Length: 327
Image (cartoon, rainbow, N blue to C red; front, side, top):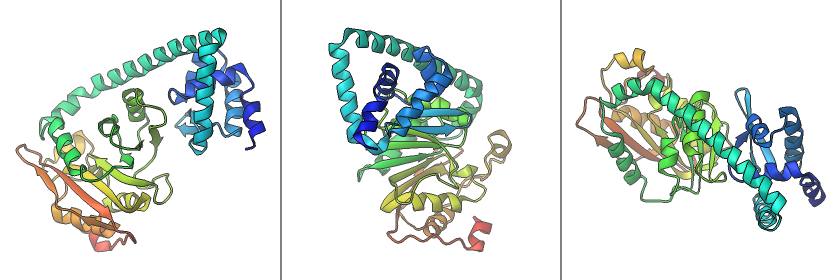
């Protein structure tokens, strides 16, 4: 886009307000309409102009469309936000509009948090039942942080983010975090939990771990926290993780050691009853990783394990039929 297109796109008070709002957080089109007090079709037209100028980008999540600042024009976006901050400081009318918008934005944040709390309340019993069987979450998180402490995290992909806890845990150590989940309701819970983070630092994406919607070599670190036991065949998910990792990039898998709690299949939809170290080593090797020694958190009915590995520089995943049949 030429510079004239950018200035034309910003030559409207509503679009200036939208640009200012997107500097604070990612918003659905309906949420923008709520803040601006305008109809959704009208807001969509303004959004289209900003997107055409390369200043914003859309992302569909089920029936919702979310807007965020364009990542491909970082320097331009930063300069625009600085200009808008100066305008807000020097123009009382614009400042009043922005302040009113922020108050409405706070109401949206509160509504998201209330929806998340409602979700937690509905499922608290199920999660408490499962937590009672394994090591305390705080200890698992501490050991995972230790396992990843020897090198920078860089750009991190949290596959199966759930409530967003892993993204929150590593937010101050990663350059940027992409949190992915297939479940729309869980993504909305994660969005509420992570909305205090800078918009440029966190991105939430709907997607399947067996078919990641990212280019090759996009990430430095991948985390799968209590996710892989939902996979009928874990190897394609690990092969996809290898594909999107840069050479030498790291993967960390937190999951259960092999166990015989058959009720987890029906009560919690676990497809696999944990993994043995040999199974995980075979899976990681086939997916193109060089595995480190696993870490075990013993002491409960379910043993939590942390497996870490580095992607081989020329990883080429191979899927032997014997492996998929036996692990």
